[in-house]
Length: 361
Image 1 (cartoon, rainbow, N blue to C red):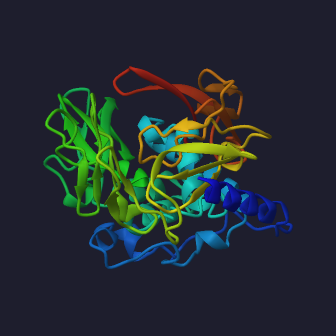
Image 2: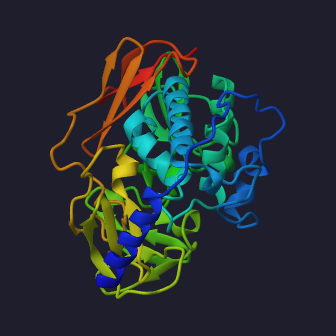
């Protein structure tokens, strides 16, 4: 890991020398610029569209400030229009969005294919109809007759295979697209969950690489991802103990399932490629934000990004100000500045979770 530390220090020095940021119009018209992936995610899922720079916008051309603005916009609208269920919750969504949008902070795992297309769709939304089109590539399915979370593809469009839905609000279908984190929807008991495979929501999971799919089994089922969604687009087995999605870049370290911290960067080598991820930038904290030790899970290069002395215990609202909490860090946005209604606390997952969300416009 000494080589990794040296590279991380080099990255830190380069980032501190970054130039100033140009102003831009976040709320411009998006008519006519949606990509084929956004209209039909299968176009990306079948491998015909590659990584990082496909589509009209190259995320890596954005500055960290621009990436944060787009992440806040995407996640505020997602939670407002589809409810803050699961990964739609503002804090969790913001961290995931920054992994996709901020190439300086997360250089080894740029989003690819369907995952990239979904994030490309969300930063552009200007209405709940736009959000709906991003979340449900195959159209919005009808709710089942009872309050439940389930998979949208059950009796519905194959294009919605990655979408987890909740039906508790007078028959309105709300969705969480698991593809935003490289996962799909699986049935666990009577519920739909985001998982590494459609059959991996319960028992019977085997930790392995199956093509590009990384399956990782815990008591709750398969928490793996499709490695085609990020980095080099490949899954690799690196010991009897773990598999990992291969990072973009050249091999330069001995695979290891732990992370070191230096100047707010988490440095690790789960796939034989040095990872140096800017936890301070991703968690939007002044200092800290990195906790060294074993990766949890061993393929998760982001797991060291956490605030040891948590800044929050949960989400909160203060008028139009929304504060989401994840990994001990706070993510805040002004709902009115996003063109949305006042912040409110919303119960999701059939009443088992509560998160803050802006009201729809």
